[in-house]
Structures are given as C-alpha cells and as structure tokens.
Length: 440
Image 1 (spheres, rainbow, N blue to C red):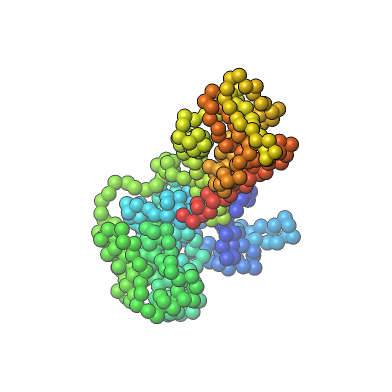
Image 2: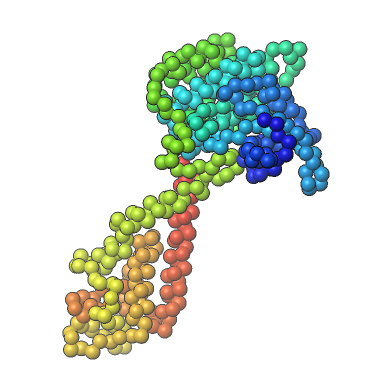
C-alpha cells in the first residue's frame, strides 16, 4: 500500500532514538504506525527499512514505506518509517492485561508464532538481536508478530565487519554478554527469556537491577534464568534447549518448532479481542499508564461490598449495644439533652415530659450519620470524648451517645471538620487503590 498523504496522531511508543506515532492515511483513512527519528539519527531506521522491505511473512511486521518530512516547528527534518499498526498492543501489555501470567496454552501459541518469525529471519541470514515481549505485537485475531528490527543484523556476507553488541542486557545470551558474537543462537536464548516473561510477568533475572551485574552473571557464571515451577515438563525441557550456555549446543528455531512442547495439541487458547472482554482493560501503548485504568472498577467493587455489609448498619448496631437498631431516618422520637457541670440533667422518655428540642436537631442527627460513616472509613475512634450530647429515644427510653460534646453555637465548625476528614479519607482510599494496581 503506497502512502502519499498522511496525518500524524498520538504517540504510541518511545525508543532510544525514535518515537512511534499512530497515523492516518488519506483519503483511505487507513491506520498505520509511523516510526520517526531526526534525520541526523536515521541510520538505524534506514537499516530497519532496508531489512523489512525484503521480508514478507505472516509473523513479521510489514513495512509500508517511508518518507522524509519537515516539521512545522523549526523546520527540522524527520525520517519516517511506515509500519503495520497492531491495535491490541505488545505482548508485554497483553501479559499485564491478563494478570502478569498467561496460561500455558496461550504461551505455546505465542511462542510458536515468534519461533516461526525467527526461523524465517534466520533462513534469510538475519538475526533479530533484541527479542523480548515488548518487541512482539499482537493482532486482534490473536496472532503474534515479531517487530522492531532496529538492532537486526545480517549473519552472513558482512565482509567481516565488526558490529557493536546491541539489544537488552537482561535478554542477552552468554556469548553476547562476553562480547564474542551475536547471531541466531542469541535469539533463541532471548526467546526462552520471553517465555519466562509470559509465564511469570517478570524479567529473566528479576533479582538483578544493574545491567553490568546482569552481563557479568550471564557471561561469566554457570547460571541460567529460573524456570517457573508451574510449567509442564515439556515446557521446562523446551527452555532447557533454549538456555544451553554453549551456543553450538543450543537448538535452532527449526528444531524447536518440532519440540513436543509446541507439537502438543491443545484447543485454541489465544486471547482475542472478543474473548478478552471479561478481563480488565489495559493501555494499548507503552506510554500510557495502566495503573489508573481499573480504579473505577475497583471502586465499584468496594461500593458493592458496602451495600452487602453496610458500615453504617454495623455502627448503628454497636451504638445500640446489641438492641434493635434505632430509626435514624426519622427524628420525631428524639430529643436533645445537654448535660453541663453546673446543672446535671436527666433524660427521660416519659410522654408527660416536655421534649427539649433544639433548632439544630435535624442537623445534629445528620451529623451522627456522617460521623458513623467516617468511623467506618478509618477515622480514629473518639468515643472517649463523647460525653456531653445525648440523643434519647422517647419510645424505647434508651440513651445513645452519638456525637462529641460541643457548644451548640460551635457545631458548624465541627461539622466542617468532619466533612474535611471524610474527604481526606476518600482521597487516601483512591490513592491506595491506584498503588495496589501499580504493584500487581
């Protein structure tokens, strides 16, 4: 598809030297991805374009063309590489969307797609050199495609040219970490690391944070990444074939495609757009923050729990000391009694007594409900200070403490303080939900 006119949209990815945008072609309205870099830094993009233009495989992202444009701000020239757009997002995002762990059937399906793409590249004497979940894109039909060939290099016919080591340290093979060679066997090692990502949601060396330390451990020890214990024996043996420290003993992509782990028949387990409607929504680009996505859903769950077991009802039961809950929705049977040090007052429920009513009775009753809710939401217990204002039920003759002792003229300040406390509690709960989602 030749693209002559197009419009740049939002950012959907960011790399070390290039930025990926969503774009629209005119007049067709076709969506595609544009990988743009400053013209002075376009060597990597130009090399990627040269490699992709010669490749045609269902498990390799297709190149749709390229052009050079002048930016409206400052007239800066940009090199733009046109690529297929994956609306579902990357495999890394898919892993996060499904709880940081995929089922083995899904892992088998995606691993087979990646291997078929790598086998095609290796048959063309090309090594990808940066295989990882972020560089695998998922299509709505569940198919996985290998993407981002910015680090790719030919493995034959390079006239002995010395190329610097490229890729992500955590996914490098031992021979790459030592700076010896970087070819097709290194892609197989990285594929095993990608399987670990799918099975655990973690990088292959989760206990190592410093890249230099990771390179030393990979290149100069006998360690291999830890295989998730819940995987089947076939999957563990598959990883063992990927992680042979001697590159000459490592299985090739064609050999791994015949491994029992991939040859094992199972019902379709790919996650498609239609089958993933029951899971939480995650962002579709590497720049969007997924920790904000499910806050609304979690708040709805909390609200449902409240409806099932209302804190207000629990507080009312505690206040009534085990007696039937008082009727808080109607204050016709309540009177307000202030007990002062100068004139002790006894509250009774005798019908002959004249009810002592205050003009703020309705407001005080409403404040009692708000105070009950604030206690349920985590406000410290101030029951020791509730010693002066008492609500008396004329029908039952029960005395129930409901709100702190204050001068009636100063009630407004207390109510404002209670409202502020409740607002702070709600804000704290929302923040906790977001942090909880971020740590999953």
